[in-house]
Amino acid sequence: MARPRIYDEDAVIDKALWVFWKKGFSDTSSRDLIAATGLSNGSLFNSFGDKAKLYLACLQKYNAIYVAALERMLISELPFKEKIKKVFEGTAKTVPATDKYEGCFFFNSSVDSGIQNDAIGNLSASIQLRLEKAFRTAADQARQNKELPIESDSVQIAQYLMMITTGLRALVKGNTPIAEVKRVIHSALKFLPF
Image (cartoon, rainbow, N blue to C red; front, side, top):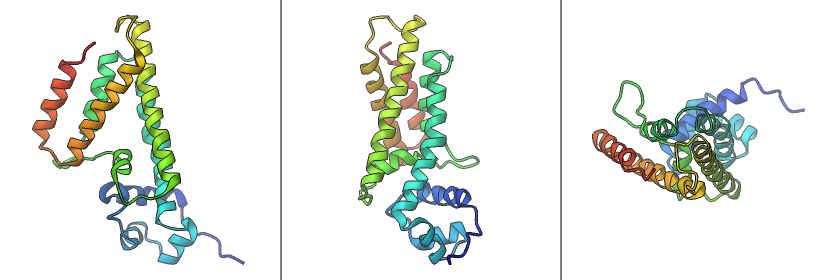
């Protein structure tokens, strides 16, 4: 008979999420996860199977919380350009009281060459499509509200905004100086073609 779990699985996923977010999949060791979660090696991996399955649970939680929040903001009643400004500025958000970027767990998942897991790859692709759809919905709303010309192509606008957001995430991942990233955001907003 298996012993009952005496820990909060959701809290374990939260703690693992922050370790993976900070260090990435490839650079996170079992020791890092054990130290962060407070679980033994056996408890951690008996519960989640392996590092990739734990990472997948973290990415699922990220999708349910962070991607859902971004999606809600993009389909809210805020003016279109204000939504886009929030997305761009959120991409370059720093950890409070530091000059370190928070980064993007999803983007880090997309570019981590150490992840060789179909389920993680499929979920990452699904998140990409979900974000693009949210941008497209925001553009459709803006067309209906006459913030964009009615003949605007929402699909092209969504792809364009995803491209800029991805570029900003790459700058953040490369630890580009904050002032430079702020200038890029300012320019990106200034030169939006709509």
